[in-house]
Length: 216
Length: 252
Image 1 (cartoon, chains in turn cyan, red):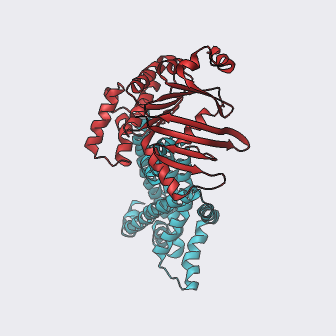
Image 2 (tube, chains in turn brown, orange):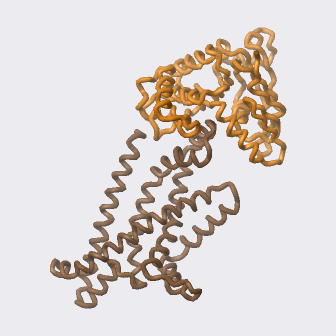
């Protein structure tokens, strides 16, 4: 297996970077979009609220694979053509934003309403209060589910192989097909996915400890 | 010169079909310490929270620290009204029953948060003022402690310092000692007494009769969403205050 690993390493090396790039890229973009959706969903106004509600309903309610295929194979019908990697990144972003918005929203709503009252009572505006008082507390509460979402996202990047993105799963398929050593190849990338996620879990645990310290 | 800090007329508020404030009038002059007493559910906390619009009144005219807002039934707030509310909030401070300190900030950071993010005071100046205020409430040594490491009484004193940091013209106290056990109450009440003696305008919703008796200039008694007695402290605790008040006072 080691010899197979060394032989496929040049391909795997790039594939790992693509997987990480897609996963972390979609996470950053998805978090940004997800935060906006969460705030819209919490709005006092009906219209933004319904838009956010529908967004989550659509992108959480349909399979990620269908979204990837729609963007890559469907959109060209309307003259929108994107290469595989941007298509995958877009689909992963839209999909994860739907879930992340709910994670953020649960964090924001879990902050004691007294925190808003204390801030507003001193004349603080909505955005200042959100940024300086509410979000630091909300992010801490939302950290465990957000961490889970990032890990799920890393694994979900494997679906990009269906639209010819050469990420880890696709490399395993290719090398497996060329050498007939599928078992070893898929075990190998399974292990790499697990290792990546193990590191992310450690990062999450570290952040959690850091953010929780002052509350004890 | 007597200056009117709070002038409220005909304020009404209902939660659903349940009226909690019925045409309440209230006036507070600069330097006055006014205590609002009354049984639970009498509307005293709602009245206090209406004054800085944490609770939106249904109708009435409120003039707080020179900012006048006419609330008309069924009409939403204009942008100008909302600006008035933000400004009046910056001139008043509120101390809550449950403290509402910011748990992710140290005691000092709690005290200077408003200075930094609302008043845009430069950090060194804010820190200097914050430290002085913490000293004033006897917590100079707790500046770097997070709220989770403070006792209830200490938290409430930090909250008072936080309120004072904004140089408020009026401080609203909403049952500031109700969440504290008797031993911790006194340390908060002493800080409040000192403020009252220093001439701060204060409006205090409380069940502490002794504080009312010793520190208040005037006592307002509310029941069923209405003010049923507004008297000088001496008169309120005197024998001539009426049957209902006597009955209330006997229970304590």
